[in-house]
Amino acid sequence: MLRVDLDELRAALTLTQVGEDSYQAANLQLGGAIVFGGQILAQSAVAALIGQAGKSVKTMHTVFARPGASAKPLDVSIERVQAGRAFASGTVTFSQEDAVCARSMVLLSADEPDLIRHGDECAPGPPPAPGGDEGGAWRTVVAGGVDVRDPDQVGPPDLDVWSRWIGVPDDLGTSQALLALSTEGFLIGTAMRPHQGVGQSQAHRTLSTGVISHTITFHRPCDADAWVLLRQHSPFAGGGRAYGRGDIFTAGGQLVGSFAQDSMIRPMRPARSGRL
Image 1 (spheres, rainbow, N blue to C red):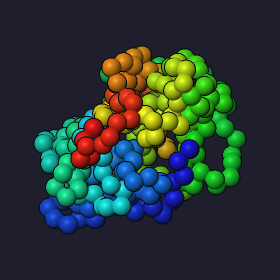
Image 2 (image 1 turned 90 degrees about the vertical axis):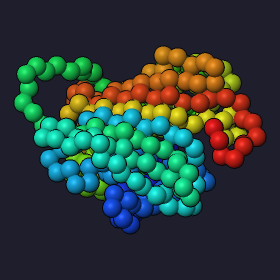
Image 3 (image 1 turned 60 degrees about the vertical axis):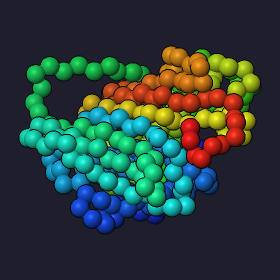
Image 4 (image 1 turned 180 degrees about the horizontal axis):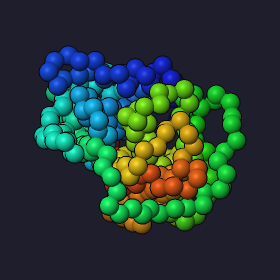
């Protein structure tokens, strides 16, 4: 479980303007040398919403081109593609030293009345009991005691994870940013579950793993400071790649978002100029 410091989180989500549609972003310091991809998802949502009052994130697709160094700030560039009454779209590009690390395409939308409505539901069971502050601002609990780090613990390519943020602002934009962050980190482990001798404890040691693209769609508003269930499944892995998808449910079983991810899982080999 990642321990996220609340002050660091606030700093990472507060982009500093350095020019027209240009910003600088701080990184979460999570103990590794590489920028956490979930952080970039959150910052993409924050950046896309700048100057877009009355709209929220509908869907966001992010491609991770190369790793970023967590010790250096990120340069953030926003390109507005379209803005109308109901929809707006744009790209958010993250770079370091003029090398692109990631780029997000973000679609925003305004609320409109229902013509039709339906939504999947689930019976998630009771959310976790309140705990201590060992997780910092982010609490996560894997359902059923599953340990995706253990290479000898084999199971189906499914994983349920409870997630909740503590002490964060309750506005919709922040909640969407944090929910996006929450969905990034568990699908690789989900894909590893059926395979004896493969676990996330080997990542960046004997296995080279990383997210290469991630898509999230929000169906309705949801508070990140309440427990949500990330219900995840990996239908395919092969050729050094894995694909996973998931849904976000409230503790009451209401569907609020969906996500999908392509990732890399292959034997470790010598790095070449930061390329994947």
